[in-house]
Length: 322
Image (spheres, rainbow, N blue to C red):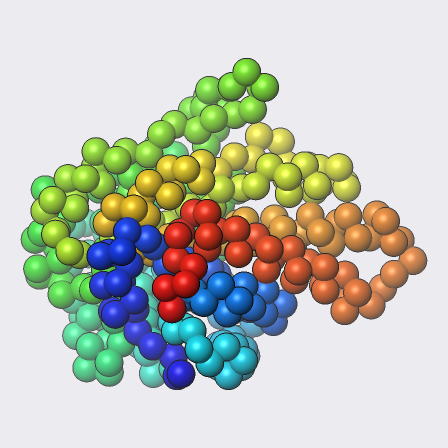
């Protein structure tokens, strides 16, 4: 099937108590690992591209990689989504260039300006059959060019969501309930340590999510900054020359709870990067004489596929939902 929008996908997810995985892609191996896992599990899928990915790999290459995935996985619905579009021009370029979904992130702007910018994108996107994700509230952390200090982060204000959605016409809403971008989502001071000495992050603000859901019944909610930072890959990186002390992510059981509520899209990025980096570091430590990219990218792709399969089944609950 051709690329689709997320509209029907989110309706089914909302009613079914599961979420769709939105995985950031940068190169061929990441695209292949993600889509092969989704194909094998018959799961709907969102492949998303950030401004940084477009600068790195080029818009055309990324679109063609996703189009190749659609050909190779004809039985599952796939959305091509712009992640954290910074302005109207970037969103327009992606809409004109084949994307079926875009995010306009004006969450750092004052409320009224966020509405104005988002509405402009929505009007253009809807005229071209494309859906729009917007954001209210600000997540801490770093993702490509999105950098927000912890003290500048702010939870979504539930009392604002009805006005925002009504005035902008956006199709889904990313909210801030305590998730954070990057592999270093929280400082050690923000966490506690369990009996094994492992950092445990503060719990997500499900009270905010519940209040937003009451005010926007049936409306799809999105969580950004939702990578869980798998500790086995952090360990693999550190044991093979890396230095990633105290990298900690969102507990998977909390993401599963969110997916059973009104959250229809969960963004996952850092986990894939950790899997790829850890696998490659280990490969070169074990095979210092090797130099062929096909040899070290093959196991990296396999580990990405295994990780995505785990997310689809155990976190998102969207296996068999295509």
